[in-house]
Image (cartoon, rainbow, N blue to C red; front, side):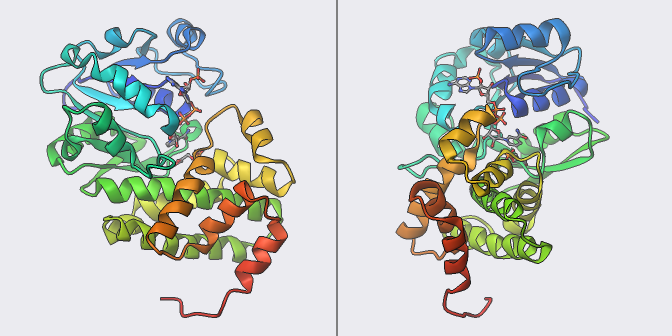
Length: 340
Ligand SMILES: NC(=O)C1=CN([C@@H]2O[C@H](COP(=O)(O)OP(=O)(O)OC[C@H]3O[C@@H](n4cnc5c(N)ncnc54)[C@H](OP(=O)(O)O)[C@@H]3O)[C@@H](O)[C@H]2O)C=CC1
Ligand SMILES: O=C(CO)COP(=O)(O)O
């Protein structure tokens, strides 16, 4: 489906950066994956594996990796950030110093699902603060139900690339789509970013329900009422209602809140098994974005007076030592209200 070979720099060599880079590369694009761990980079170049993050999966054999940021950015037409939320400012700042190395018409985007704690900023806002020459209206964001471990095995996957710049979104759509990976465009960047971050907090709740052995009725209720929370906050902050019904919203909420592939879901299962969150994070060895995002969501819901009882319950379990049974009982004892 790729109409021309595009030079792409993927910045961040964890599970999702590697899976996206391998997909771009398999489509015939010239891809350089930047990672800061020399052993991981060496393994990708030598044996087409990233065993620390994508155990056993074989990567596209044309994919190249480097620890040298300048080499990764040299001539890049598309630059895609895929590091955890906590690392984006530092990494964007470094990329900003090397902007002159990219192609003259290069554009930038990310596939990161989080909100910064305290500032409550979206990833695009942070990127633009660290790279003042960029405009948010030109950035893109890739999201949707897409676990890296499924994408790398070519499971049929549908995602959305959001950008106010339709041309940029369409270029990413062309470069990334293939017979197993279908990319839609979407013009709502802020709404997509909020949806992607908020669903991670609800996925922790999904894991908790699973860990407690709750019924399918309860899981379906979580998804439905969780989506209502995502919509309320996301729309209040400027997102488009339709985004929350699409791949970036409901689609990603379903996969993350029900799947053992999700790190957020697995964290919830472990919390229900009485592990504390520090222990869970240590054992996961990968980023669990919903843990920090729960703080940002708690602040945002209070600041904007948006009712988000499920997300705030996750916050209480993570940060206020609330007992899961008490939180569930409190949720069920709330005043009876209309569904609207
Ligand atoms: N995994 C998935 O299926 C999906 C993930 N996402 C999103 O993608 C983003 C990245 O997640 P994911 O790839 O899964 O995370 P992982 O935990 O799998 O990998 C994180 C990567 O970022 C690197 N890293 C961490 N800090 C820095 C830093 N300061 N500078 C440079 N590199 C750094 C890590 O390197 P090291 O370990 O060597 O420090 C590692 O390579 C998240 O926002 C996540 O929500 C979105 C869709 C799907
Ligand atoms: O966003 C994801 C899938 O679409 C990945 O979710 P986790 O970070 O919970 O693994």
